[in-house]
Image (tube, rainbow over all chains, first blue to last red; front, side, top):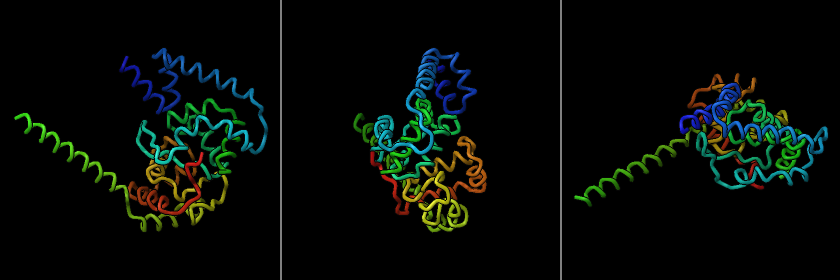
Length: 134
Length: 116
């Protein structure tokens, strides 16, 4: 069980092809993937607006962000230890691009990939607009 | 006998901790070399000040955490972060270049904060 678990975590950080394989290995991860998929399918039901995000709406969606990005000196602990980036005051279009890259699997950080999976395009635009406005 | 063992363990622990401090202090690299490299490689897109980017989809770098910048550059170079432009930029950077660049940009005053 311990072996399977670490294999799955490894797969999470190395690529979606491996991830697919590990889903069949680990029922717990399979459940997590199904849950993420369900959230991802449901997420676009939220009002989807084209164009720039709404910073006020973004403020209401930031609960998943503040636990790491809102704490001075907070360090990511997996898979490597380093200060999580400061995002308040960053360019909105860059925050958007980064979240979309995490969602697509173009960036490896497992926690950020999981969080980005749960966000719709509108959520991402709103969060980007909110953090850029700070 | 037992106290000797405790002292030895304590000494080993202190040696380990001080080694750890030394290792993290060595992250503070050559900021002047970082500036030279930044002007040559990064400034055209990220701005000479690390804030005035030529495109809003490029990140501000000034004041960002050095260890995060190093992770990002390392990931662009090894391909685990996929971005065509950054991959080609990072390919030409050595580990020392990346450490110096990260230290330089972290040393600049920037607009990013931990505001929530």
